[in-house]
Length: 374
Image (cartoon, rainbow, N blue to C red; front, side, top):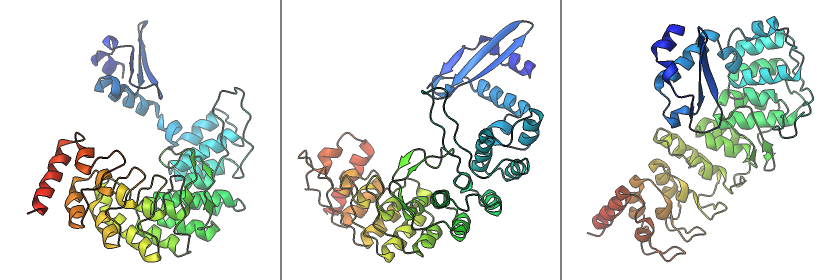
């Protein structure tokens, strides 16, 4: 390892590559009294050499760091060697993190080591400036990993904690995990839980952090873009017009995505929700309809087929052709009689409003106008 670091000309590197002080790591070496450290805080944004990133990964592999950061194999043995207190709040946080990563084997080992499943009191902060600790919510942590979740269900985790069961169901729905959704409903989670005032926090940054008012579980099921999950929640007749803190309903959320590989699935989600009775011209807090915010062509086609108004105006006086960023939808909007004479609240028509926002979009719009006017 030392030879690799020397061969990489490590000693000639800058002392710090800091693109953003979000988090940092340091790689240090001492050979014959010659010490060198390189600090990396999102160094990719600051021109950190690729070889440094490769060396960081190699050092982590040699040190088996992922035991500690991801809960991989060997964590419990290492904790035992340190005479760690498995009956502590810190142990529950470790268990929670292992569940977030889907480390089912480690979760089992931690439970066998004596980590309690009933939440322990959150320790008081020594420093008032520290970020407040959160109560451990094991079901919510495991919600995206059905195998790990089942270990907790078999252990009776949160059997009497309705909030944890409901939040876990919301997370599972958002992650599009049908098996976990069904297991949690069978366990007593409420598919019609009111989450309009919930302040949700989780150790998983890919789920939700500090979000206020997700609305209801159907909204997060729609957010997943998985038709089978939406269909499962619809079986329980949820309120189709419940809104989240942005004023969006489930149908609104289902239509929002910029990933072309989700187009067909999201169009099916929109179709399912509309068939159940959801309104296609519902408005968010800014007066936008789903057609204003949707990007995917199949979704836009489905919305228009279901009766969405191509000339609906938001609070800025803009119709969907003002706000939609997908060039491919221009022919579709014009085919459905998008009115190019409508002016927004600044007195601009769509050509004037979009001028300078991208030559490709401008050219495509003019091309479509010329084609349809023949």
